[in-house]
Length: 78
Image 1 (cartoon, rainbow, N blue to C red):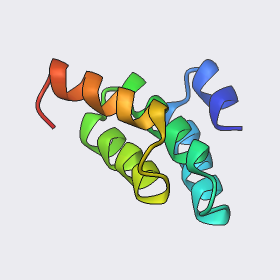
Image 2 (image 1 turned 180 degrees about the horizontal axis):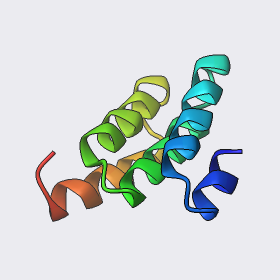
Image 3 (image 1 turned 30 degrees about the horizontal axis):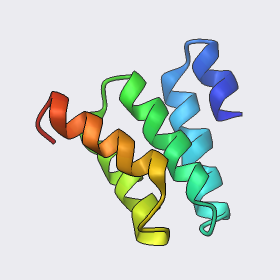
Image 4 (image 1 turned 180 degrees about the vertical axis):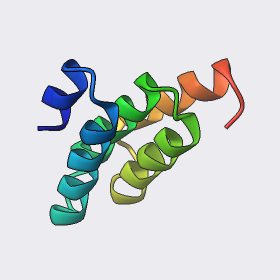
């Protein structure tokens, strides 16, 4: 649902849907990655970084979250 809302241009609904998914399924790191991606796309860098860090709390070697955080740190301040 989150990406459907994102694709329709509804960032608030996209973030809300993904946050609910994260709360419901705390053990799926990919959900935090999806949330981080949507937050990044809509310019919410600090929140996106928190989402990617939450992924790394669950799986310290998760390559997507590591890559996204590195990109963010290289491009701007968090």
